Image (cartoon, rainbow, N blue to C red; front, side, top):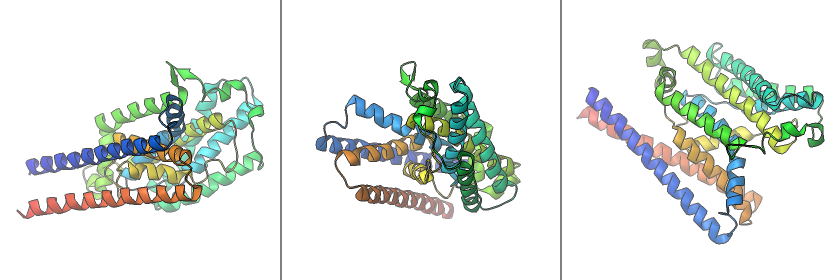
Amino acid sequence: MSEIVLEKKLKVTGISKFRELGLLVFIILLSVLVQLRNPNFLTLENINDMIKNTAILSILTVGMMLVIVTRGIDLSIGSTLALSGMVSALTVSANMNLHPLLAILLGTVIGTACGCIVGFLVSKARILPIIATLGMMNVYRGLTFMISGGKWVSAHQMPASFKAIATSSILGINVLIFIAILIYIIFYYFINHTRTGRQIYAVGSNPEAATISGINTVKVLWMVYTIMGALAGLAGVLWVSKFASAQGDTAMGYEMDVIAACVLGGVNIAGGSGKISGIILGSLLLGILNNALPLINVSPFWQEAIQGVIILVAVIVNALVKRNVDRKNLMRRKI
């Protein structure tokens, strides 16, 4: 029996690697085609801008991957991002000498609180994730408008030190990119080398079996939504610093881009599987599409359609791969 289980794991891992390799090949081919249409695409300046523009998306995909792995979804992250960003912007505008790290900490704490509330509703109150997060999405968005009075916080109201968060560098690497890399390293270790990380996948693969085996599913669910909130709070501060503007409708609908990046990266929307390397490629592909399509003068209406088609194809491929694995495993059991 153990040999069969091991063989199954190796088979799934092999397919996952093949899928990621296929996504990487597609990214390379797409980049070459765009470069042929516009020679400015693969310049160092454009590549750097594209990676910077994708950094915040990449940070959020880490949390969303953990949520989706547990068979959940979080539609409130755009509103959490906006609320955290607005509070941070209002705080630094009222205290011009506030250290940027304190602003980052403030936004992250607010996001953590928002995620903790969502986690409580999902794990303890047993409300369906899509219902709980949809409700809190409107609550957090409403709070953002309330605390701001419906007004913007513009660039001239923010201190230069706060706006410099997104433009400064650490070890020669832009801060946004540096933070994204650091988060990926931390969560790669967390997912692959800690007991809690393995429990997250166990809960997503089979919640009932996880409970029977002694895993505290309530704790795990509460934790992943809290992590998602913390990352959204951090992203909120980085977003406001990057665009030097805090608005009530900041990041409205952005959760769809985050979910799309996860799906493109091979995260199973039904839960139980997903890899850090996959969501890196998924975020990169979405970033390339957002950057490349305007460069080759594709209509904004077609841009939405093209992205939708690519996401749909990714979902279909994931479904076919999973069905193929399940069918082969079933045949082996019969034999």
